[in-house]
Image (tube, rainbow, N blue to C red):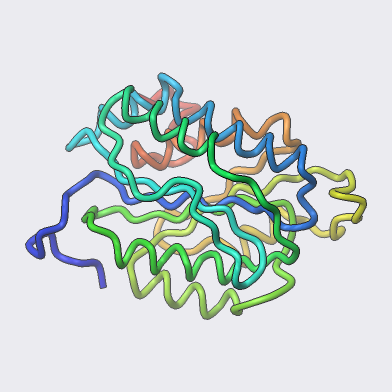
Amino acid sequence: MAQSVASGLTEVDVELVLAVDISYSVDEEEARRQRAGYVDALASQEVIRAIEGGMLGRIAVTYVEWADAGVQRTAADWTVIASEEDARAFAATVAAAPFERGQYTAIGAAIADGVRRIESNAYFANRRIIDISGDGPQNQGLALTLAHEMANEAQVVVNGLPILARDRGNGVLRAEIDLDRYFQDRVITGPGAFVLPAQTTEEFREAILRKLVIEIAGLQPGDLDRGRAP
């Protein structure tokens, strides 16, 4: 269950794990575009306004790159972002982190790792989110049903950002599946969970910017279209 703020944790509006696919199907150029998309979005005025517009005006966030069942690497550890300076410093940490790709796509293990990170951190929020991005289906590791059980028990929502590129990643033809539907049916879980796809890696920055604003502000995708974004 979610921990009580009475246990001495720092209260924030959202606890957010950004979990980014660096498996073999993601070639180095695409992987670097993904990271650059997050770096740009995290330092954007839209995201900063969303953070400052929260009830407490601060969030706790960590950035993790994942692949195989045993590969979940911290690019930027838990950080409180409450200002433009904080956001830019966190984005710079992500940008400067060493980069190393994995092989397989263990989405369930990435979700389980995100739950453990949230359960063991020094923060409390009523909204706890794991944001999974990736370009293919699971092919190794913990079953997604078990990962969902862990997330649901911990009151953690899992949202998805599938990259729907049809080209080859690192010379390997990606699985011919409806990845958007796969994320809808197999990856996301929890109240209000949603999928926001990017058609290409070039669209990734816009998609992650939109997704971060939605998650931080506690909206749903349609709310931005109705002009309710901060």
